[in-house]
Amino acid sequence: MMESTGNPTKIRVSHSHDEQVLHLTLAHPRGNVLDRQMMNELTESLASLGTRPDIKAIVFSGDGDHFSYGASIPEHHRDLVRSMLESFHALFRTLAKISRPTVAVIQGQCLGGGLELASACQWIFARKDAKLGQPEIRLGVFPPIASLILPSRIGQAAAEDLILTGRSIDAEEAKRLGLVHTVSNDPQQSALEFLEASVLPRSAVALHHTVKASRQRFDRILEEELSRLEELYLNDLMSTHDANEGIEAFLQKRDPRWTNR
View (cartoon, rainbow, N blue to C red):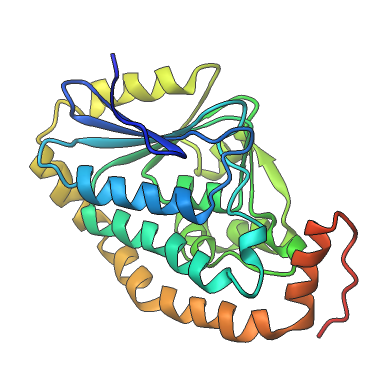
């Protein structure tokens, strides 16, 4: 049984299993959009609660019919995008730093930044209706985190297929690719049963150091390459017409007029 430990504006924080499992719920339906406020609340909760020595797992989930539509499109505007990207990437740097087993429980749409967050977890448990995708290319931009994570999760070819086409895949295809661990009607229950059987019987200190060991290569890539991708995104891509046109077209609910410049 979960007990509430706080009520931030856009996430819900709780614990279960004798406070060994930290639950962070995206609590701003309909789409649980990851805006800067939500990103910062997630990062702050991870930094303050995820480092407790008795934490054996962290579970991310979303209220309502969808896990997350992704990062806030209005915050991709050229005047806001640097601070948004810095806040978003701070979340992943914090996840790497705390080195705890993580689970994403997804349903409905799991797109863009939402899929990047889920993909950063060791395990994804998906409801049968889940749709997963990186649609950033349709806006004229690219996903820096997914560009680093997905190749190591599902292979270079499959990662490039998702990133370059912007298509969404269903939960079963994601499972065949190795991205999703389990597909079920009740992924929350499936995830908790998995944790109870396979993770919670282990030592928290052993889990912490094993995550650090198993993620050593990826964490090094994140540390070395993410800053380069940030600059590619902010200094090169966002100086182009098409990147800004894609964002404006989405906000104005019209088709983009690409100039290839």
